[in-house]
Image: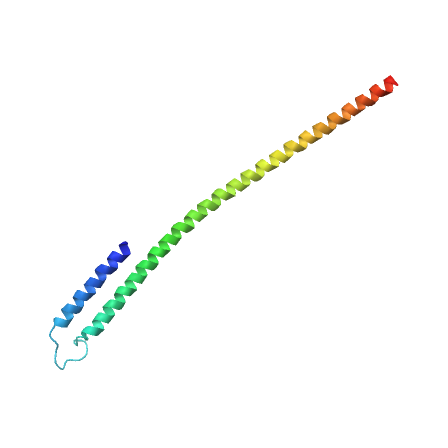
Length: 124
């Protein structure tokens, strides 16, 4: 919105300049540095300058927006990396815990099977 307002102000200034230049007395026979350019050329140049300025401001705003977006994405990326690292560590901890539980269960099963064999041998 701010760009549109500044572009509008610039366009109004170029119109005022065009009107002012068109009211200036034209010098007869002078050519070179002192010659006044035709009003239409000044108007076109002012219009092109206004469009060029508007495009520059628009591009600057776009670059600013993209820089902000890039910063936000970099922050999000860092957060996701930390989360992934933490989740990987948690996954390893859980796998290790369950592996220990399985080993304890197998050890207990072997002990109980040994005890069962002893009891069967004694009762036979």
